[in-house]
Length: 256
Image 1: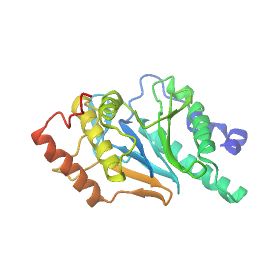
Image 2 (image 1 turned 60 degrees about the vertical axis):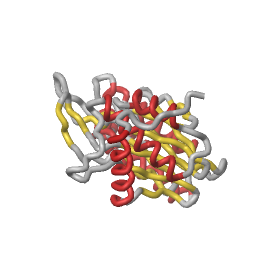
Image 3 (image 1 turned 120 degrees about the vertical axis):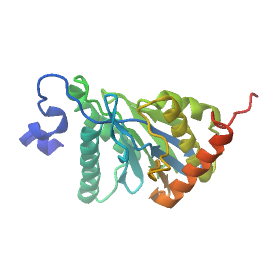
Image 4 (image 1 turned 120 degrees about the horizontal axis):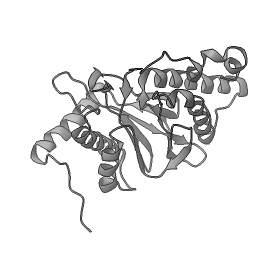
């Protein structure tokens, strides 16, 4: 980014000139994350929308940033994917030059700078608002960072959500989250939250059993980044869907 800023600043995503008038572009929607004692889970639905239309049913919104961290994208899909690729390259470049990986805090700060560089686009409706999660080797725990369109960074404790369905996903996790969740329970929690988001937000896609399209669920622990296989995510989504046939509004939290 520094090299481009000095020599060809017009190539940076946030510096490109927009055409006159309203720009219609596919937008990614809901991303959720939750920590558990052994790490953190980051997941996203598969729908991209353009206005009131479904632009893509199987978009991928969760990407590994490096071996111990991942980014979930919400906002303008094209700019977000480009930003993630540049972020991946920056982390790889730092590791090769310095001979050591950047701390999780440093990675979160660097992503904040990149989002801030896109502020001009964001003011014209092409915002990118990701969710960043990873394993902190120094603190030996999973951590979650959320952002606003200006690059403002906040650390989230326990769980977090971003995107158009985030208000519904956050409400779902608020009632179901516990600090002592197992990895399996944490992955189930995020799928439940995405289901609740899809139930109330038309821009969020639920599990598509007919087409075999299911949420992307990733787990980051001290062993590194792992994406659940298609078989694992399918089994998890089908299990949640089958339970919803009995309880359409999802599992109930205890009153006290």
